[in-house]
Image (cartoon, rainbow, N blue to C red; front, side):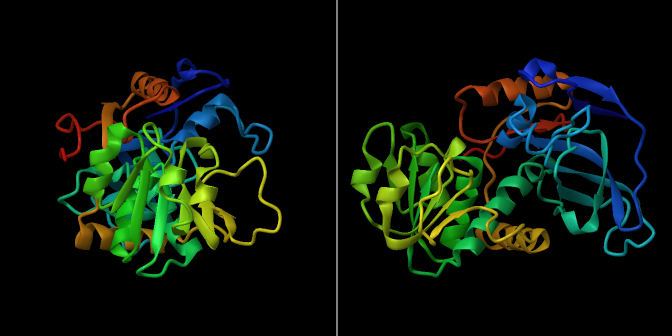
Length: 318
C-alpha cells in the first residue's frame, strides 16, 4: 500500500508517494480501504509547518482528517461493523492513505444512496459545525450570524442552524450569494459589495466567525448584540479581556464524535444535508498537490476531494 505525505515543510510540491506496510487493526479498530479523502485548510497549515513548534511530528507526515471507504478487516472486539460496510472516518491525520485503521468511536456507516466521495467531505466540517452549536447552546427563534457562510463549515452550519429553528444571517462574497440562499440563509450580507457590519449592526444572538484564518476585519464584533455569544473557529492573536461570551471552538473540550455523526445523519435524513464539493481530483500525490495548490489560492466555495471513484465528478448541482 502507499500513503501520500511529505518529508519537509513547504509548498504543494513537497508531496510524494510513500510505500507502507498494510496496518493491522487492534481489537477495537477496523481496517478501511480508502475510496476518497477530503483536503482541508488544516492540512495546508500542517504542510507549511505552522504547527511544527506546538505539535512536532516525526517524518514523514501524512495529513488527512477525513475519509470514506470500505471496511476490509475488523478487530476482535468489534461488533457493530463488519467487512464490506461503507464508512466515513474522522481522525487527527493520516487519511491520505490507501488503507487506514480507525477506532469504532471515530467512524460512522455511510448509507448506500450517499456516494463515498461526498461522505469523505463530511466529517471535518460537519463535526466542527456540530461543535459550534453545542458550544453556543443555541435556542430556537434566535438569530445567528455566520461569517464565511459559503465555506465548508459555514455551509453545513447554515443548514444545521435552520434545522434547529434559528434565523440565519449569512455573510459571503457576491459569487456565493445564490449558494447560501439555497442552503437556507434568511438574509445575506455580501462583504465584497457592502459593509456587512453596518448592514447588520447588533443583530446576532450568536455570531460565528467561520472565515478562513478568522480574518473578518472586526465585522463580527459589530454584529453581536450586547452580551451575546461569539465563537471563532480559529484561535485569534488576542482574546478580548473580560469577555466571557467570546469562545474559540474547542474551549469546551473535544467534540463528541459519535454525537456529531448521529446529528449529521439526522440532518441528512430529515433536512437533506448538502455537501458542496468544488472539485474532485485523482487519488494520488499529483491529485493532492493540485488540491493544495488550489487551496493556496482564492478558490471556489466547496470541498476538494481526492477519490478513486471514476464515476464521480461533482456533487449534484444546485
